[in-house]
Length: 133
Image (cartoon, rainbow, N blue to C red):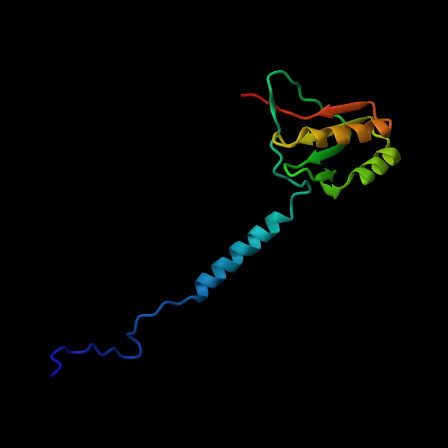
């Protein structure tokens, strides 16, 4: 014999969770984040520059090569190899080449880029660093 009384709820008294507003809010948040993701004209990469005690900030127009931790190369934010960097430098003839190498990258990758710049007759190669705090 069951002595517990079951609560009987009518159709309008049942508790429920309405997920439609939650879905609407999440859709709006994702749309906002998606728009923000494509607003930046620059590509930010995980290149952690080494620190230096002495250094100065300069504004110059130059070609920029980034060397990621795994050794892959980026020319002006786009994937590249040494041959395409050489061709770019030969065609554009920039007065400066800025090399932004991750602090953990092997030295040989920096040397490869500097050698390619020398072959393309680029005299000024700048190695970017972070200022120590």
